[in-house]
Image (cartoon, rainbow, N blue to C red; front, side, top):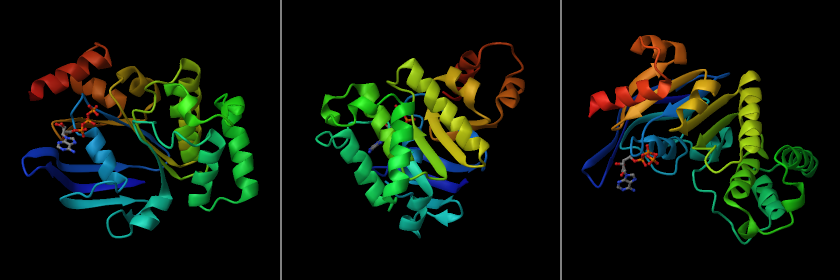
Length: 242
Ligand SMILES: Nc1ncnc2c1ncn2[C@@H]1O[C@H](COP(=O)(O)OP(=O)(O)OP(=O)(O)O)[C@@H](O)[C@H]1O
């Protein structure tokens, strides 16, 4: 579960990137965080994951406050950033072991998970190559695998489908659903509305740092009373605010 209460963030004392945000992402749901470029999605995710602090408000992950108990809060989640260009000099397998070490995953557990994940993402043969030699999609996959190697209860993903080939994207979506079905939490940002439409139990739409809507896709459609595609509704929604 992720809870944000009255969260604010201003950059350089001027730009209000996140404006009094309130949000609850429940256990057992896939929650989509939608918004156009510059809406405040990444800033929100960086605050949830403790990469940057909020100016005011509180953020809890599984009831643990990220600012008061950062280490304990960070044990609760796995985070896939939007840029997979990390630890390029390491081989895939070295990176996965490094992530397993950080989270104290036992040898037996990590071997099982690495085998499972690399088969699922078709990365078995690539694990002994340096990440530098990987394509963008493969880098994305190794980052996702690194996050999942410690089996976190809360998954937080920033634009996770970007750069993934259709099959890997399908596998990831399947895994997200399986995770939510186990009563765990999946929170991801996207500006690809088709993904949200097919995958999410609930969504929040953010623009100019403010939540414009939060609810199910059905509610979103009723909210706009039209038969248009979600994309069109979304464009209307954000357009109204400008
Ligand atoms: N480090 C920073 N310093 C100053 N302004 C920033 C900084 N990071 C983001 N911003 C600004 O804050 C606002 C919100 O940005 P943010 O990256 O959170 O949006 P986003 O919804 O994730 O967009 P995108 O989909 O383009 O990543 C934008 O106006 C952006 O230019």
